[in-house]
Length: 457
View 1 (cartoon, rainbow, N blue to C red):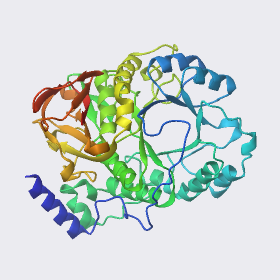
View 2 (tube, rainbow, N blue to C red; view 1 turned 135 degrees about the vertical axis):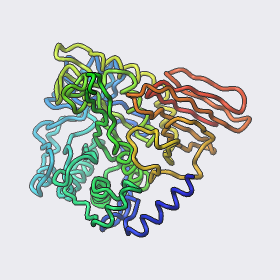
View 3 (cartoon, rainbow, N blue to C red; view 1 turned 90 degrees about the vertical axis):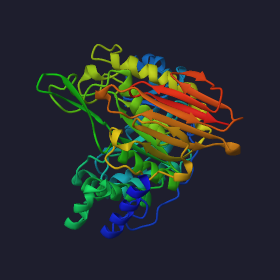
View 4 (cartoon, helix red, strand yellow; view 1 turned 90 degrees about the horizontal axis):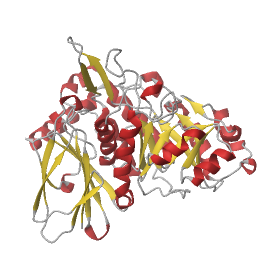
């Protein structure tokens, strides 16, 4: 069936004249990223938090957070962060410009002309926040600013965070360019929807014009509504998986790391107001964490950690009273579990992502991923909707991230079997524990939203 569907998709794309890949989607040549040295290990899995006050740093350390993004950073803040082994990406540090939405040529030149000799460096200072959610018109000016900081050799990252695919044309600075006939074929593939087409342009232009060794995005996939009986109905945005897929493809093919800011906050707790919902259960954090890892993410950043920031304050990891919330404890549990394999995960190179039973995968509207490599499929079988990321290590070793991607509203437990060659050393990291199966096949059960990391050596 998959081969038949793949053939139909190839025919549809050929007829429409639209390419599936994000590479070469717009005019220009993708930049193979220049590899930079930072004050942090960019291969290891890192956990971040968006915003974090001075008096919240101890909670950040407790929750297993490796770095914070925030403004108002001074030496006292950096000293405390260093004492807790927390890095800081500073917003507006010592007067250097930070932008939102767009940048002008003058904005870029402000970074070029900044007196970096006056910048008070610090071991805990990992980077400077440059721009959040830029339009594509800003890309040339972003590149100038990034180069200016990189040329200082201070091992600081200039943080550029992209819009998600549900942003509109004006926000992205892109139009889909699809004609009516091409859109008719959107019944067969999401590559022929306006949202995917304009987002491919947005990402293609980024990798053609900006030389960062990472791509960062924020994506908040979960919303909720009330049914006619007043019950909360959890909803997952159908563009989520394609968004990660396009960015992961761009990262893999241009040697960049994927950074994902996930949803740890919301506007509505029970769905009464509609819109982004609270993510105060472990399954909410788990599914987002492992879905990001299945696309090779090297940093997952909780939005939001602090009581500062957007959305309803008590939905954040730290509530309005300055104390941990249920979201905090859910994220803490997931963080500490994945940190058990953060170093091991860093030893493997991301190779591909595919779905099992894609019709059951929440957040997906197309059965095929750009990142899928048929030869990388492992011996994983299931009747549930799973997302599988594959990785390659030294001496032919392999690793897999497997995620239960059934819609969280359905509260489905997923089972899969994992077949492997006799004589291989298999390690399954699940809920922080290590399970080494015996035999040639192992059945693994995943709770709603749960994921596992498996190494085969």
